[in-house]
Length: 149
Image 1 (cartoon, rainbow, N blue to C red):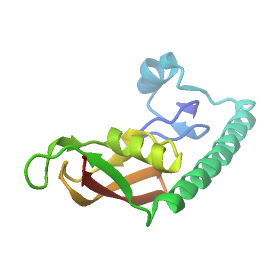
Image 2: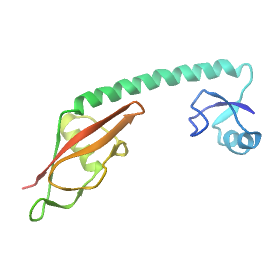
Image 3: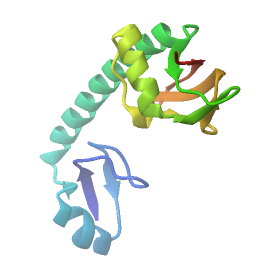
Image 4: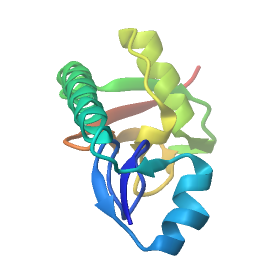
């Protein structure tokens, strides 16, 4: 069955795409959830408009993500954390802590779900976190953890 997607569907396509799927998948999943509609000759123009809108918003999101990346790359984010004896922290520095520090130091708001550390940050010193703000914009955030007074 030929459908036009209203939403991005993993493994099927993106919003506005004309896709061919099994009849049962369309009837039992995509159509009842409202994620797609049947492709008719008049709907093709609507699909083209949806694809154009998607491309414009995607370009704007990419530009915004690149601007954030330019601001954060090469600029360490300093976080003060309580430490025990030596360099070990009480607990760990989380993505939420990093997002709060970025907001305080640069004024940029990020989603904590977009930051990922390979391992928990549990010591003072310099650490790296991966930030993926857009499908095509990924960079490293440098975090400097210092002992709090």
